[in-house]
Image 1 (cartoon, helix red, strand yellow):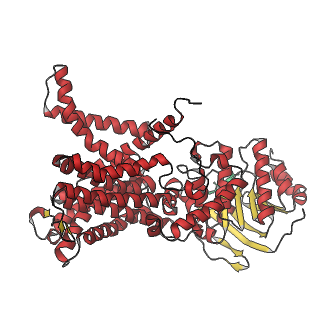
Image 2 (tube, chains in turn yellow, purple):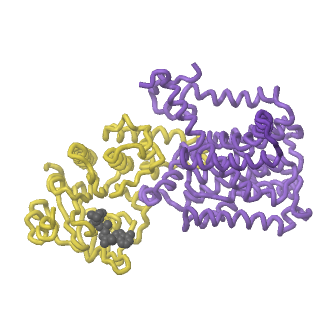
Length: 260
Length: 357
Ligand SMILES: Nc1ncnc2c1ncn2[C@@H]1O[C@H](COP(=O)(O)OP(=O)(O)OP(=O)(O)O)[C@@H](O)[C@H]1O
Ligand SMILES: [Mg+2]
């Protein structure tokens, strides 16, 4: 790959997370560099989703430090992730079921819209102008993801694969500097997977977005990621470029050997 | 052809976002013109004071509830109580503030109700669904209790009854049914338009996002607390103004017990039948719930006579209750989006008719 990978922008040090007696993450350290595609892999229940939730402030680890652009991050609430330009998609699709594709993607731009509710009610001042301005941006996302034909459809009526794509669209609409994707290709057929891979690579390539990706399909992971972290039972057992990880004894034993 | 929208293509996003997106939806504007200029020519006094005015006022209250329940997803059973707050607040502003214009009193009534709404909305930050409904039920009883308990609120009248002051704007006394109707119509139209604007803007999208999936909403950057409380505030504002109009333009004198749980349920049924999460639905639902009893009053005796059945007034009211029950179950189970959705489906069908493919 010819692209330029930048400095470390997210550094996680000795992260431990417990739910009551369950140790979801134990003493995990790794970092993410600007513009790279960083994969997190591991068997079911390894703690991958928990890791993403720690990164964007949904879960608060009991131990460990997180550095974002070199500065230590204090306790953070989920809505602050958006302010820091981190967007994500969920393992179980978390779209707004009652809203159209267009409205769902428009919500991705929420933090960028400044008009208050009185302006909205009177459709006056910034309200109208912003709506048009952000609509333009959202249409770019819609074009990029090739979903023009369904923009007015309520998302609840769409097939699974398209819903996943719309969820990516909602995340992209925020123009994030870092994008967290939790199994974006789970449950898709080969063709849909190929499309999704293409979109992820294009986002990374065209917008320079840093991507942290959880994925079970080894072929995909080895193909598109720059570096891979391997988790097992909440512990880190491997970290490196795909070739390194592929040949790591412990990884083969714990993960690749275990029925995958 | 009654309704055709094929062949209209939008060439700009601005056109696509218009409030009345297709030419034919300007029918809405025509309806409004008829309501303002046509109806006063034909309707009788009975129609104004017994049907049209309460219809508009209940539609406004339903709008308030729909903003909270339909759009922001927070179930409330305290609608009537928030109306009571509005009615009593407007009365007290008129009574105690020297020379305050009546419209300012109405706005202050709305704001007072909004404040109370925020207070009773606080539990929504912790609890959802059924439990929140119970909390709003507490609001319902507590507010009505307060209004009877503290005589100051009703200026020491017996059992809390208040008689609304005259409605005078710029020296014009709105004392006839027609003039009251026009005033209520103007206020309700403006507020319905504002509600439509709210729900199509990012305020409305934030409400719906919280309704549909709150974790995802917060990850997107929506702050749950202000979003929910704003919904409570705006919703209660609408209910408060509706309550003020209920006292000042409809009944003239009201008592706390008039704003009962029954009334809250009636408004809830309006949005269920009309359409949860639809502005149009509030009007359809209010019309339906208010007109159905009148319709039955007229038609049932005739039907009974036709079959030679014995008939009493009690039967009418029993049949009414049965029909409401059946309808509400129908809409909850078969068409949760109510009459508004049925209307939309009919529109879609008509658009393609007679060539469905
Ligand atoms: N909110 C929670 N409360 C309690 N336990 C949790 C919670 N979230 C995760 N866990 C536990 O933490 C562990 C790691 O779960 P996590 O969802 O992070 O795994 P995963 O690697 O994403 O698995 P999968 O591949 O199945 O998605 C599991 O044992 C899970 O039960
Ligand atoms: Mg997971």
